[in-house]
Length: 335
Image 1 (spheres, one colour):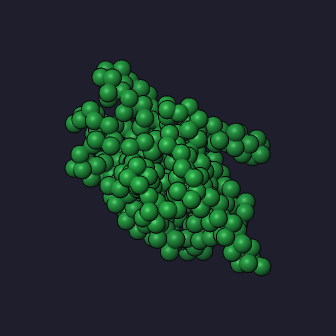
Image 2 (cartoon, rainbow, N blue to C red; image 1 turned 180 degrees about the horizontal axis):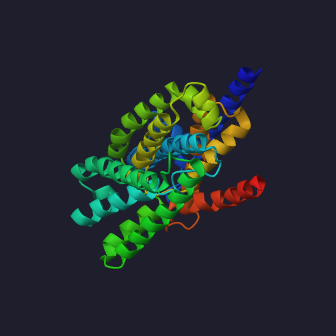
Image 3 (cartoon, rainbow, N blue to C red; image 1 turned 120 degrees about the vertical axis):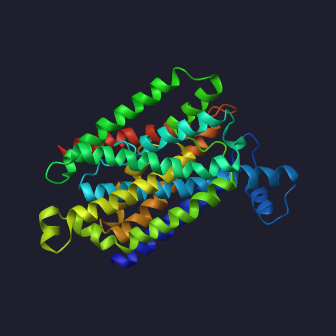
């Protein structure tokens, strides 16, 4: 029965994703009809249509799907190991640590915008982001450790570290040039502006490998969600496995942040919605969470591009507008 339900939900999710992709391809400063979009994809578009679809909108949509998948699975992992529905990488300092190091990297070597960054700079961005993310996790673990790492203590420490890193970024902004300031502002709010195929070629293989690793060990993640005592009784080395999944979560978050900035709440929305639809089993829930988050991010990005056109607002702001009410709902429900 559950298998049949999951198939139906999967088909609906896939159709919704196709619909949001088509909508995003159509809308913009240069609007296109569905027929024009299809003709262009099939190779029958004019020069302007080809450039709009293949160089601007398709890379942006593909990157949105990759980033949303990484952040949602990262959030699903954190919610599983902490047993807290409010846990997500944007709130406990993992995203912020990655964003801080990427901001330092970009502003120290160039004043160009994302679309004008050299390929060597782009190649190093994931490495720099992973370094910042892992250092942030290390700081959280050091402060949270007390005869082991307890989920509540870990989350509270993460919130404090996130606030500290955000303050450092704000202080760093005070002495910036106008060009660097605009880049940092974009990173701290999250944006898909300036997306290119280089970002996709760089992050897609790494994120795919990490997702497959997590899915192959999803049963262990299910057991960790039962509680430390029960998991230990079932033979799971709790601290070791928590650290493993925490590193996986940090790597996924860092890779997403390196190309899209700090997008908060996306790692909260997808897993929670998926859990309510298909249940808490991570092997099923995580792929659905990725799809749901992709739909949310593509819609949010489409709105960010078109609501105040020709001006564009960071997509992270739109996602936060959606995420904050749901966050409050989860807090009130948990009382």
